[in-house]
Length: 228
Image 1: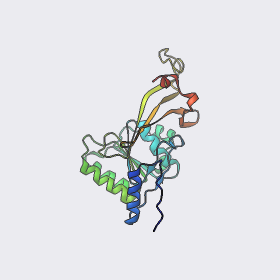
Image 2 (image 1 turned 30 degrees about the horizontal axis):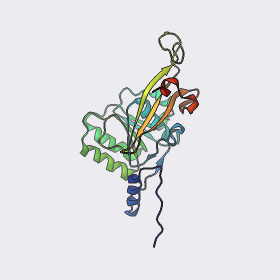
Image 3 (image 1 turned 135 degrees about the horizontal axis):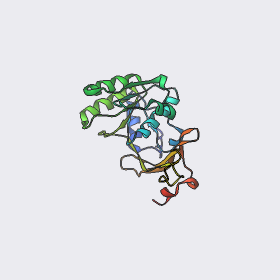
Image 4 (image 1 turned 30 degrees about the vertical axis):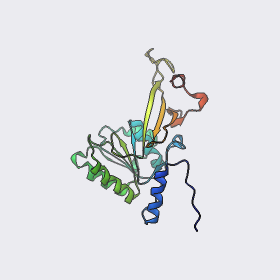
């Protein structure tokens, strides 16, 4: 009799079972995709999956880890993409493809990008149906790519949202009403939801010194977050 292989308690059971079925059927293995250090232990990106976000900053953060590691990434349906902000987050522009307005051909554009890029960030049109999402999901699995969706998507392995966002800089860290100084950093509580598993939360800060995204230590948790 064969020896049973233990499941990884840090990953959803269904996801691991799908990986094993794909391996037994000769399908593509689900490879880990690099993320920013601040996301280690909170989110694991794997090829063949789609991940939902609720803000531009989170979309850029998920693309930046792979881009920093040398992968090609792309953005579709994002006409006001700030390339300076993307570069500051860590996205290497020389390895980035942008299709700002794919229009009614967005599905064909995303499929083409998925064929050649490791991570594709999409701002989809409203009302994406399950059939269109299924076409993209199948392409992700066959091409070993990752889709990051800023907006609604029928099926996502995980959804990330920023709770209680807060800027600091004007008039001091907690008082933005004074009207002087400049915005220096943004803080918030990052929530990662995976199906029916408990939500994982961690406090993060954008633009902390030279690092685009950092995790706040418990002692550094801002007062506004600790009281929530």
